[in-house]
Length: 171
Image (cartoon, rainbow, N blue to C red):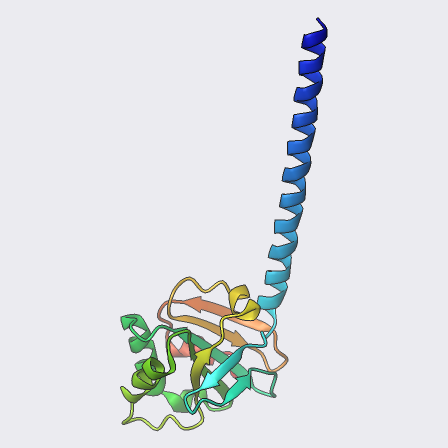
């Protein structure tokens, strides 16, 4: 009988310990998720390297920001880029950013694919993968983010997006 009571107590202690560990882990995950949601709902401070190797931090300006994340070997990314680059006049009044996590040489090659188009004024470079980029939860390329002049997330797209869907947010 005494052994049975001890076993029940040990089992109870184990159950309470496991429950406490699970509760702590769950709270930690919920807190992390809330932080990431907060980071992605406002303009993230993305650190990026331009094709000339200069370093920049994306910051608020007085215009709508349209940010595209792409992979240099992604066919859909090339289609999206060609569509945007062929309709640049539609994006007047907004700031365009094209970011990749690929190497600068690959990003330069991507840009040179469109050398017949004047891409002056478009920011193209390598995003530094940090907490800000991680918070965007990019899992598909291309991924597009549109932020208001005040830095609030207006819309997020994954995959190919029509020009009018992107430009309707430019103020």
